[in-house]
Amino acid sequence: MNLNQRSSGVLLHITSLPGPHGMGDFGPDAYRFVDWLQGAGQSIWQLLPTTPIGPGDSPYQGVSAFAGSQWMVALEPLVAKGWLAAPQVPDFCAERVDYGRVTPWREQQLRAAAAGFFAGASAADRQRYTAWCQAEAGWLDDYALFMAIRSPLNGQPWWTWEDGLKRRKPKALAAARKQHAGEVAFWQFVQWQFDEQARALKAYANERGVHLMGDLPIFVAHDSADCWSRPDLYHLDDEFQTSVVAGVPPDAMSAAGQRWGNPLYRWDRMAAENYAWWTARVKRALGQADVFRIDHFRGFAGYYEIPGSSPDATQGRWVTGPGMALFDAIKQALGPLPIVAEDLGFITDDVHELRDGCGFPGMKILQFGFGGEGDHEFLPHNWPRAAVAYTGTHDNDTVRGWWMQASPRERAFAGSYLPCGEHDVHWAMIRGCANSVANIAVYPLQDVLGLGSEHRMNVPGVLGGNWGWRFRWDWLGSEPARVLGLITAAAGRGPFALLKLPG
Image (cartoon, rainbow, N blue to C red):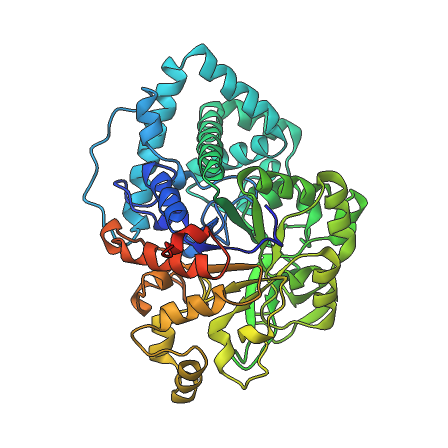
């Protein structure tokens, strides 16, 4: 994907798709959404991380930086293969993901499908499965064993496991692989199907001129296969506890800052291996998407280090990150990197220098532009071409919600600048992004549909009630695609024929 080409797209996570099985997945509704995007003149579908979810159902705190979320594996292809009988589906909510009900049911279906595969798969399918497992062994073997050990322990953190397993002693690992061979095979099967379905969806989208934009969190979770398999790459003590953790310092929004709790990388050890772990991670990401956003890009220039014993972020300090050396190593191994840098928050000159030195576009959020005056960096007339413009992201309120919560001054400023009112502010912000010089513009589907705060995806700092939003096809109708197509075509981001001009 050419990041310098004028284009636009829609932000919608896979789990937000409609579908009969409790949450969005790689099934028929994903392909239908690609068709909708194509009809609306869009060439980008931006996703949130597709790795396994973690605490609070967040896709940013999963148990692996390499694995895919098992809950995104569609059941229809498994039924079509004859590995799974057509399931009796509970009465799941169509507008929210009830993870507590949906995930146990979906795991039951996946286990039945795995049993069906191992009992009766064709020789060709078995050969493809075996070849895939061999090709992905670098991360898959440890991930599958990690999950297999966790299952009978009810998800206990790996540093509480018996000594031989948590310290990865060869005899203990060999015994565990033998003891849990069936469970290991199950998790390998699920990941194989994730990859098969993700790549099939990507191919379908690309054939229709739609590129997939992924999302890569900078950090990994402490309780993850990544930390367990290579604890030497993280700041952990002799008992594998975090000596320092990630976060951001106090600011006007939070007097105590934010203590994320992720373990920090031993960048010196990663450098000694020529950043092989990161190269492998980026290579895998590019196998599933055409371009991806790196979350918290500023952490590569300098990151905030908080003592592991500190209950908040008030005691942290800034530490220099790996900088250009990391991306030079990845680029040397993989070639040009189609990366978008999430450069929001506390940004210093060294972050801008790293972003520009790498040639990565940054992000501009139009909702942020109305708190100051005409020279505000988030107003479209101040944006550079090398940027991805958003009405808002998954962490923002919807545009309609923002308007209702904004101060009278912000509403008056936005109303004059765009211009707009409550009834059309979502289209005005979309038009503002589309007509800007930014090479890429992206809009959450909630904004395309003009939905309110009750439809936002995430409220940062609030645990629970997030990441569950889904849309219904009857909400779309024909008007949103038609209007979005007109705005896109007029702004030079899509087929001009969508304007249907006379003569």
